[in-house]
Image: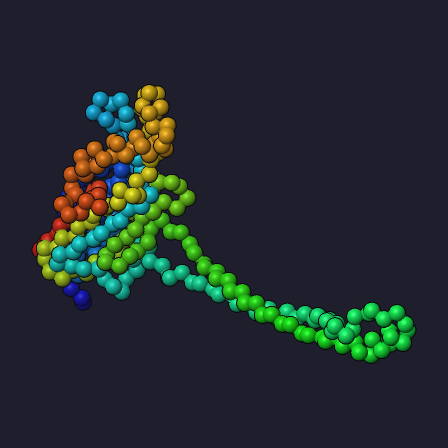
Length: 268
């Protein structure tokens, strides 16, 4: 009888930077053992209100895209198992059409000009009439590319990453992962650490609404009002709402970190 694998006790630790905007919780829905376990990730998105110090101006923001990155110690992803968001490459179809057209033109030589006044002259002129039938052909080439595309809210990427994106909406809302397994993890040594970072780029911020006094709105009539106000507030608050961001990673805002730590326990 095969020996039952020892249990791997996991402990979850979370660190939030933009809790209202995005959050992630790593978990093992089927439990874990010394050999492997299924890794799940509860990923949710919402909106965040950023206000000025005197609360006279505020902007509500959401996200159009975000990226989940995983780092492993003492374990790694099982490459033979299915991952959440795996998909085949898009297929492209090329339709090539050739068309050939022909035209005939009739030309009369200078000798064929009807300038005689007598019938005999006309007959002579008709005999000298040279009719040249020239065939001109032209070939047209049309090439049409048809790309079969599909938009998926969750896509598995290289480097142990997953991309989350809004598809039918301007920004992401509610739960984007959690019902299906993220991936399968192989245990190599104990203890293990799995760290998930949910991050976004400032360019992926979407403005939902802006509140400001009428006088302030009038000030920005010459430019897109919502964008102008949002930039003022976000430039000041981006670092404040993102205390996790490391130096040298200014282009990426880490909104939430989730960690699973585990050690192999003794026999049940």
